[in-house]
Amino acid sequence: MQDAAVTAKILSEALPYLQRYSGAVVVVKFGGNAMGDDEAMAEFARDIVLMRQVGVNPVVVHGGGPMINEMLGKLGIKSEFVKGKRVTDKATVEVVEMILSGLVNKRIVQAINDQGGRAVGISGKDDDLMVCEADDPELGFVGRPVEMNVQVLRDLYNAGIIPVVAPVATGMADNETFNVNGDTAAGAIAGALKADRLLLLTDVSGVKNAAGEVMTQITPEEVREMTRDGVIAGGMIPKTETALMALDQGVRAVTILDGRVPNACILELFTDHGAGSQIRS
Ligand code: X2W
Image 1: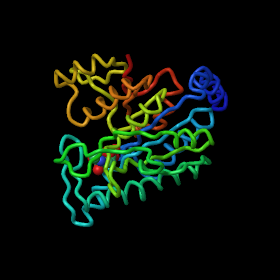
Image 2 (image 1 turned 60 degrees about the horizontal axis):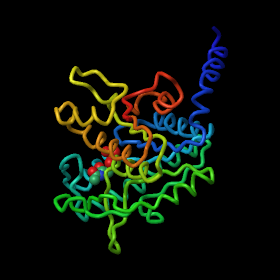
Image 3 (image 1 turned 45 degrees about the horizontal axis):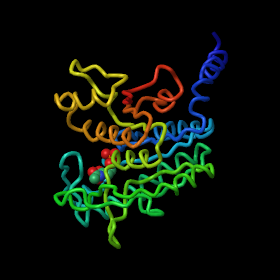
């Protein structure tokens, strides 16, 4: 078949998926490890703009751990992680906010706008979107979301705008700033919006079973079992915990997938092949 005919066939076959997701709210967590060079960033942005163009309401929540590490390194500030979360003192939280709300947030906003989308970058501080408490005294200024005010996100996507959210939050007291794990923030936002889908883009192909194979479909019960048995371990734990929390709050399905695969979001939403591991009841 000629290229044009193949393209036409692919577009035609996408119709049922386009219909299924028309009007859906899809929260996409774009992890720092999933962000590549400018070309990969442009490709991610194109997928997000395509989603918007076909009637999906995408909400992007990003991370930026590797970019924070790089700046802390330049400044000679030491950093360590406890159970997947960065121990965050006063000097560190200032760097976290500068990098996430500044550098990383604006890079994504610019990439989406360069593809013809209308992205607006905010953080959890804007309109008190995400109000936090200290997660654990040992971690310093690491926040656990306790109050979500997601109307600002609805206002933005109902106006045709793609919100891009940095996981930095305000506290209950004045002048507090919290560093929030990107997965945690994305889960809390998806839960509060009762999103149709939460896509967690990372740098692994999904959740693996004991034999090391990626599982395409998993139930929450299987996730609990695999966590108890130590099959789900390390960096996957915050992701599956986020997934279970989001499902509990009314999100219909959560997918953990490799964001470095070209067109990962489109593959997951608009083809029957799908991508990564989908967790749903
Ligand atoms: C993260 C926030 C960024 C993040 C951090 O300081 O690295 C905590 O650990 P990725 O790229 O999604 O890992 N916050 C509390 O989550 O970035």
